[in-house]
Length: 463
Image 1 (cartoon, helix red, strand yellow):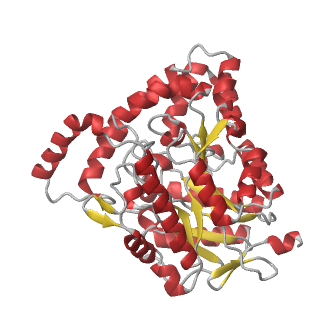
Image 2 (cartoon, rainbow, N blue to C red; image 1 turned 30 degrees about the vertical axis):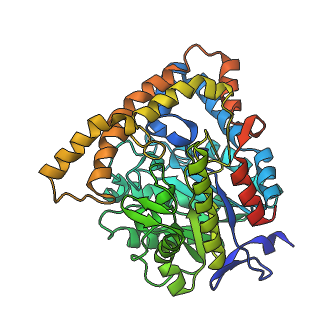
Image 3 (spheres, rainbow, N blue to C red; image 1 turned 45 degrees about the vertical axis):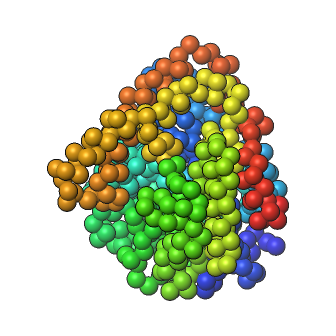
């Protein structure tokens, strides 16, 4: 097969290569790498706040040295080889715009920001694995939460044309750079957008797609729906060579999820409910006859064998549903400190030994939206939830309602942001060897594998 034949394109309800053979993209997301997330690598609050605090402790030179080594260790050719051996054919790569543009120098592309991305795209290509480039954190933050590196609870991206103009400019640069690379399956233009009005996202997407097409008319475009990639009512007729991607997290698979089958937040969750949710979230794709691709899904694991056995069953059931409907998928996530990853930093690694007690405190006070239940601070938060319900019974803020809104402000901002100082202080006193050991804790050879998860993927993908 020639390089030209490896380019993927939408053909009806499937993706196909240049020979016309269908390609079902099935793989993992590389969360925590070029867009770091608190539950993935164990820090608090947002990536920018964490980096700022660590820089203050280490100084500029040592700060840059540490994070460069961490990016190098976190994913390299060893990781690409493992994934290929399991049968994975796609890695979705989340990106934070701050690698490529500085807020103090908008519209000026940082060439060095592409160094690690070029490396990993190449590593995956050498092992026959496609990559999807996913803009996970946009200027101004396109959604309300930590994973868009949002230090507030407001997605300012939708309020300022300046931020939108910068994203268009950045995507032109990315598309221009990878236009000739057949191992890039496509461009996921904006992860989990949350336009509160629902009126801006449609016209903006049309503008963004047009700009990317001008720079690169060939690559497939991947478009997430509004409200964290669950709603697609802003789309009319589908764009040419576009995949509309849903995210499909199971309610019972969240950190606070109940038994499976069983009730979570008052809703009965079983295999039928999983399929109903999937069909609801992919109604647009099936109606328009475009490919179905689940850009993110996957349960959170608890460490309790009985509960985790139920989580693995959720995963199996979802994969069965995707198989039945011919859907491609990207499991969240590949590597972390032990919550979801198929591989994770070993409990005896230098990183986990140094930060283990800190992570336990973070969990106790519920400072991770994704990784902690907040049970340790219910004596503080429950009276506040009661007060909010009594005083503001009609308050139902977008996107997830009053209770989650209150938790975001109290646990995930008020409690989490001061913790960045404590996290950074744990770097103090380390020499270069100590810093290298922390970063190298995330190298594949030093990591542990979540064997049941690895086995499920290998069996499913024929690896």
